[in-house]
Figure 1 (cartoon, rainbow, N blue to C red):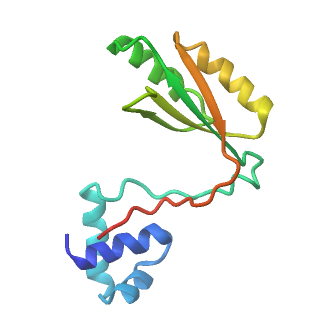
Figure 2 (tube, rainbow, N blue to C red):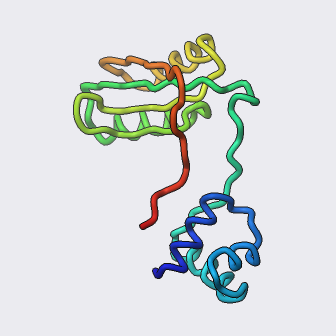
Length: 150
């Protein structure tokens, strides 16, 4: 990967629906090699997919809750069942296995407290959990999907 590839990735992260011509103009290459590089970056797995970022506030799901889960069960079967159950909850937008005090961190997009209560009941029904605590985001100060590319 060279500097042109890094420039392409930076630009695609900012706005993925730009034309090849626009990207070529920005990075200083002609369209044909720019298109070839984009194709190779996709084939190489550097670009997983193109998506539209939606405005959650406009859609009525602008609240974010972080759920911290602790468990006494650390078997492969337990994790498989828990992961599959959490994956079936569409409001879950991130799910992490953690090191430290918390075993799992789950980020959930909700419309309000009643919505969270409904999801919480689904969550605790999947597998036995030893502790579940939640924190509601009061304000999002920074949010980005851009990965720093040096």
